[in-house]
Image 1: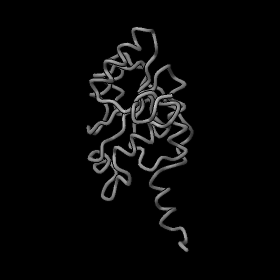
Image 2: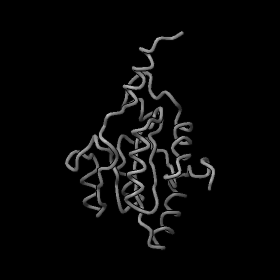
Image 3: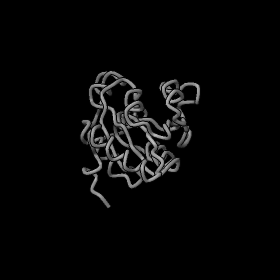
Image 4: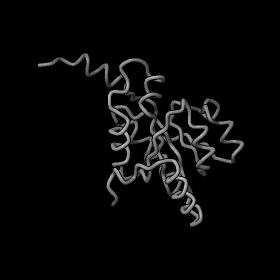
Amino acid sequence: MREAASKIVTRDVLGEKLAEHKRRGRRVVFANGCFDTLHVGHIRYLEGARREGDVLVVGVNADSSVCNLKGPGRPILKENARAQLVAALRCVDYVVLFAEPDVESLLEELRPDVHAKGTDYTAETVPERGVAARLGIRVAIVGDPKDHSTRELLEAIRKAPHG
């Protein structure tokens, strides 16, 4: 098994690796998220994404985009730590950091077979659904019901008695 750090690649390197996988007839799945304090919902989402194909690529939001999406005080963990945690998961083949507000450009560049989103989305609310449809990328809603969130986890930690 490869070490987690070796799964974290640049966009250029990832493009080359995915081209080889596709030449071999392997189905590529792309998933993405902030993954700020990894929790069970993230694991179930990524395992569900992996079941949609042969190779799982995970886009992890860079620190700047997490701050823009989640607000002040976020992320809790820096981008390299979050990327390494995601890369350490057995179901993940590659991790790539991205700073854009959405993954439309990554879908354009990587052309995965499947774009996996969590159950907090529907086929109609996936932000990249138009790009996916134009490129012939199937959108799959995967994971368990959205009963977990980093925001709720952080709030529970704040409220926990310290002693």
